[in-house]
Image 1 (cartoon, rainbow, N blue to C red):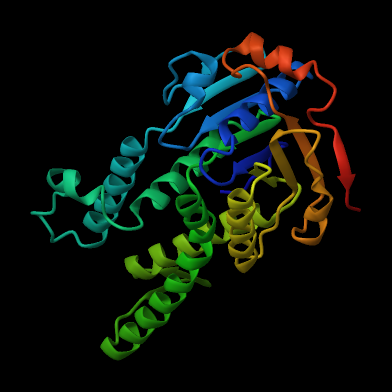
Image 2 (cartoon, helix red, strand yellow):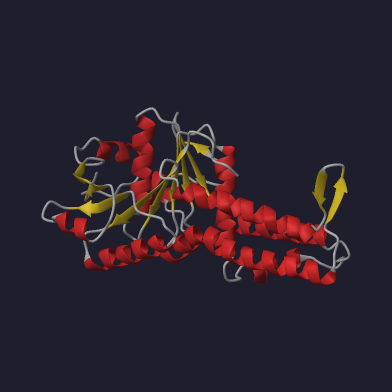
Length: 306
């Protein structure tokens, strides 16, 4: 899956309750009003975007305005899709397995550790492949723990796959399995498991490259002007750095004039600070969001790092 389109992906993450959904919604409305073609995606199981826009969204993109569509990820749908793909792969590889039926165990398997991030990554890849005409795809991300696992999944999976490839090659050597047959000057790979492992390596490498491509992926850290929010934000930055991912923008949501954010420069590496002033009224409804955007401060930076 190569992201060879013009599309830029904007991710909004941060501590629960800081306003990721509101910030992503404001950004989507702002960009759509500026003439860009935008898809706003809720990856958070809480799906606060439905409350913000006072509309019921689903897997099918909802055309809210001329340039803005909104989509909600149904995590159970994508977990089932992921399990169906796994079962199909196993059946193709091990054709002698006739009793395999993961469907009957779905009620239990959907709670397996790690399955949510695999499902979200599957959804993310399909969203990219189906929306290459979009200028921006904005992702309202789930709570911190799941978001970090999502971003770390390609690299962690590659570590496992490399070990599995080594193990498979050793098995092939020791069992003297013939994996290649020559047709003229060409060699055709015949070991199905080795083929699948190599395909998965290629797939995860592509996702990893997209995550690290700053022209395609921009990660926005949302926080509030309080100690707990800052503390978790520092943890998020530290974890992302472990996967060679950095923050593009820091968004101070519910900002008030008495708060001076200058010291953030010493605690985070980022491009700029965006100030979203605290609203006197709940930011509910499209027109309310538009009215809020008429203020001077949103999307204006008080600090820019070269």
